[in-house]
Amino acid sequence: MSGEVLTVAQMAAADNFAAMAGTPTLTLMENAGRAVADAIAARFAPCAAVVLCGPGNNGGDGFVAARLLAERGFTVRLAGFDSYKGDAAAMAGRWKGTRQALSPKVLEGAALVVDGLFGAGLSRPLEGAARDVASALGQCPVVAIDIPSGVAGDTGRVLGDTAVHADLTVTFFRKKPAHLLLPGRERCGEVLVAGIGIPDGALELIRPTLFENTPSLWGKDYPWPQAEGHKYSRGHCVVVSGPHYATGAARLAARAALRVGAGLVSVASPLDAVAVNAAHLTAIMVKPFDGARGLADLFDDTRLGTVVMGPGLGVGFETRELVETALAGPPYRKLVLDADALSSFADDPEALFNRLRPGAAVLTPHDGEFERLFPGLLDASACKLDAARAAAARCGAVVLLKGSDTVIARPDGWAAINANAPATLATAGAGDVLAGLIGGLLAQGLEAGFAAAAAAWLHGDAAGRFGPGLIAEDIPVILPESLGALRDRLASSHPPPHLI
Image 1: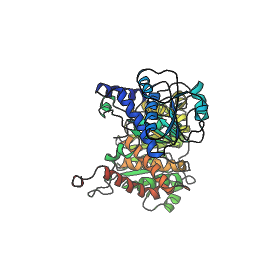
Image 2 (image 1 turned 120 degrees about the vertical axis):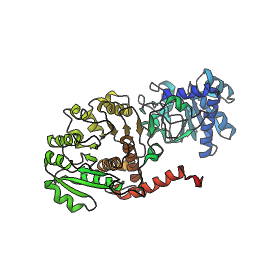
Image 3 (image 1 turned 90 degrees about the horizontal axis):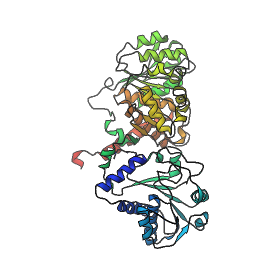
Image 4 (image 1 turned 135 degrees about the horizontal axis):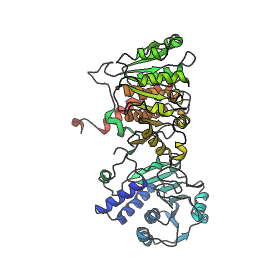
């Protein structure tokens, strides 16, 4: 499994594929309810459980879970609707206990609540009794079936003003976007993906283009050092520094590029910043330049194959000239454009987009920088994922839209959602480090989308390993631990033939 993420429509197609392949939909529902009951029994001792069953298939799963929990010694009270249709009606008929009307009163005395009201396909806000019950959920643990009721499966948005807050969410076959995108992800708690009998062959029909960003997505292409390699074969990454009073950001990016494995890293330094950069750098070289013409002369060196621009450069005409100089280089040159390199084109984004070469650039905006380049797109899109995909298609480059739910999107619609970033990454300079990680991986030949995805994952993993008190300088220091764990993880999932 490579972490495929399915939309609501794609999940329906997977269900239909399974049915056409000979697995009855009732069997799928039975398996789904059983997966929920198994997850609960593995985590909770028998207790007073309230199962909330909505009017659709999510409610049908709830009836199955209620029946199986009762068989396992749980004291189950079920609350639902007067009538059901289709498979949900069949499962309601197999429930031999009582059924109470849906109201906040059913929650009295509950030690556990199972939310089977509405699944990922909900398209309107909770209302009536369902809203009242969701609003009344208190301190006892909540297990959501498929997705917490009130959250839109394709966007992660809360529909209206009310949604269930779950401690555990049991979903089926593959995750949905809302399990990864905020604020939906925060409503899900722990997410367990259960197999229910849908063959993986369904993915060949669906052909997903959205993935959770984990090493299973890009790990087989990761550019580990090879015995026959040398520093020149591992690429040369250049980070362009700002003036003498704003050099730290470039050095953060440069150290990250070197730490992640680029064979050589240089800081291209304005003349007034050479001394301060040289005083702080050892393994990283300092290359002086004087204005856009000087940078162009520096880039005559064909070995300088990857350039990171933006951290600490300053917003204005001078930065824009420097970016245009880099964009005018040979077609093999890769660019990471971050921060000021993006904001300097706010008055004419097309001037930037028209110079970008497909497959050769990664743009790494946060929300504010994204708005400057793609005004109104975040507000007009259904979700952050849609906005990032639309932006990538518009500019013809990989777009990494930063945040706790960073989205990486290619112009062709491929996208990945990163979900391992801790809150401690909201610290000055962390974005500069991320830009350097991407540059270092690009320098080693990793494809732009995978380079951005791998860098985002390593960035989050390193921050998580460090824990509280993180500052940007700590990320490259702790990165070797992340790289070592990544190597071990990939080796265990793909052992050499003689170890199988």
